[in-house]
Amino acid sequence: MPIERLPATASPERLTEILARDGCAVIERLAPAEVMGAARDELAPWIDATPTGRDDFAGRRTRRTGGLVARSPSCRALIQHPLILATTKGLLAGATSFQLHLTQVIAIGPGEPGQPIHRDQWAFDFFPFPKGYEVQCNTIWALSDFTAENGATRVIPGSHLYEDKLQFGHDDCDAAEMPAGSVFVYTGAVYHGGGANRSSATRYGLNLTYARSWLRQEENQYLSVPAEIARQLPDELLKLIGYQRGAYALGYVDDVRDPLEVLRGKRPADSDAGLLGDLERARTQLRGRR
Image (cartoon, rainbow, N blue to C red):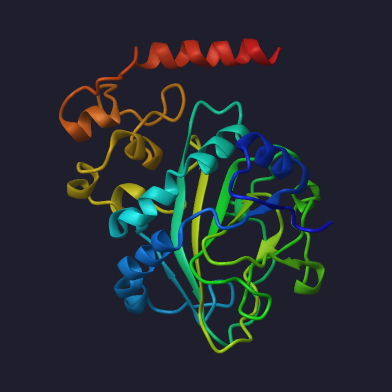
């Protein structure tokens, strides 16, 4: 099946529906050119200082620069894009909350061969999640145009419903071509991989991913975002980073304190009834599924 392409005006309900069906979609020109340009400028020194990968999976001609919450105000806005967050909430329905899993610029240099086709959720120790149960909602924002020639992400639409641990080649995939400012949205179960860059220019993409809060983050946000920077960020972004309980009894600090309370040195204005409140919400969710 072809990769579904939606306009920037698409609703989160429609995008969630397509992800459940196909495992992936492209939203064209969702971010203004000035936002993408600002992100490039903010991150350029960090990208230049990043070494290339050490193996074929990371890419020996590819630079992977993380820590984007601390390093790029423009990326903070993309991380909190309303369409992406609402879609993630819909795709990961049933979770008490979800969190930012990974932030990374993927700069695929000229001459880089195609990345092995894989599932992102294999990062969770190759745990065999039930077919159709999604644990991640992932995005790759195009900082530069994505073409089949310069390494656009390769993907097999519908493969999120395939059996686990299968092997595929790039000839089995479609290229997620898109103009700069567009975003490729895909689930953690869909088979995909970075494309081969046969052009003379580097392909730049922003990989921003989200996961159910009871799973460990791939990028350690608490160290990637130093406390002195975290204290300057809004509460909603901090909760997305992980400064909230992920479910009943997950993620509190010492004497059952709220993480935001500890970071701020005071109790947040919207703090709820603590663990008992979380437990009651969990019970409500369970009743709603019966």
